[in-house]
Length: 377
Image (cartoon, rainbow, N blue to C red; front, side, top):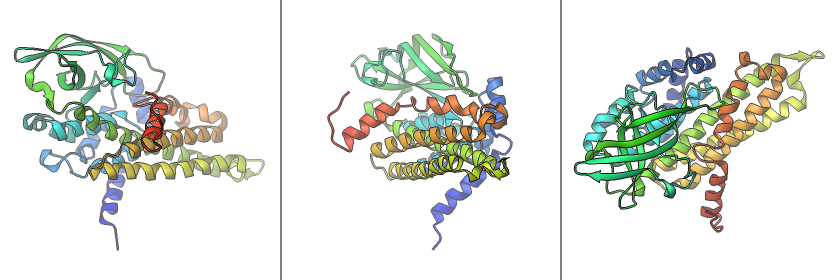
């Protein structure tokens, strides 16, 4: 009997791939050189409803959940344009607003996030906090009918492209809260961080100097840390999907090259030194895709899912690293050529082993939660 849900996801994937035909890796590199945040691709995805697949229907989305958004992210990356914003605006921010936003916040933001007309950035990382969010120092103090934010955030994406930032700050009662802060609010200054990756998405340090926002800028004022944690698993799942798409993209380029490139009268793909690394990468990718799908399905069922999300992100980052390295080795010198579109992804794949959460912290989480080993943090 046909699986209707599976067919819907397959149709979604094909629709995204069709929309990305004009926005492949050449476009990704041009957009990086131009520094335009790949806006054309973003709006194209918005027009077909791909950005809003995980947003509830009553707010302009497709209501299909994080599994569908992961399909979108994988397809976009498979086409050669792995846009990290997919793991932020429609994954982290839309999920947080959908679960904890007020009626007014959801009405203001979710329809725009669904159609791509609005973008939200996520500002949580700080220079001195690292992976320990309990060390966040950005402060929010209450002054009458307003909150006043002071502090610094680090490695914030899309500050130049976002309508607002979802900022995590510590209130006077020491509780962490999330605030919707207009990106152009008085008191915000930014400084670009030069990162050695080819990407149309840039990173910034953001400074908050007594930035005032209204009292209703708080998302889930009584929810505490639940607001923060609500977006972490979607971020990891969609990041894993992006990595799976990169792996698929790299393996396909390498396999095609290995079938056609002939040296000493035989295609190089006939040699085990070429075929075996690609076969291992293909196997690693298959496992990572299964873990990613399982993590997304668990999240959509309302299960905690932290272990699955950690395993998915870990396995996907390793699969993408293996796939890209094997692909570049297959092409030899051409693997380093911008023309073939592999080396241009090296920095991004390496970055994903650090962000949005490092391999080491994922392993810590899995060891503690699944194996009941003592915590080291």
